[in-house]
Image 1 (cartoon, rainbow, N blue to C red):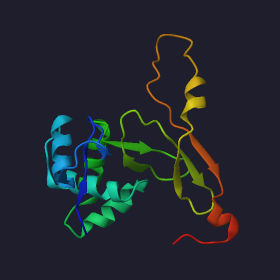
Image 2: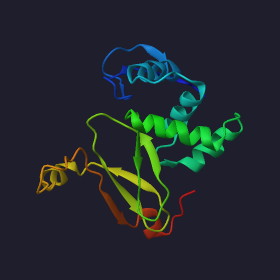
Image 3: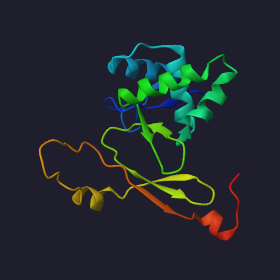
Image 4: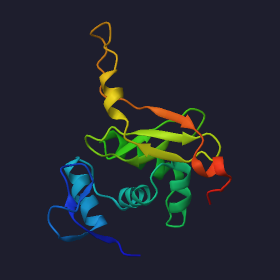
Length: 167
């Protein structure tokens, strides 16, 4: 597997911007830099967790733990690192109703939303932020500051509607 890609990290986002420098940098080197920028120690478990989530967006903690078990990582280590990465906004934890929490890379300024198929439970990203942002309610008192919006849309995906089962 090629563990390098063209581009550089843009800001603190962990997003590859291929329009800037055409440097080739390993994913681990980029994650090391971002972890330091966010004030976290660089550890092998953190790098492994980041790489799994980068390859498998919308992944639950149990799946991450199963993938890393063969590398000697306990479930507790995986869960602790997921929490640490969420706490510094490197990962985003999304919590669909009646489903385990899912993790994806956090992208600064990207408040995208999600579609979830009621039948196969796959999650899809969607850019429906404009209308939602305009309709964010203002709290009636000063005891609450809204700092984000997370919207889930539920339905049935095309594969399930047409009988094509996703593997």
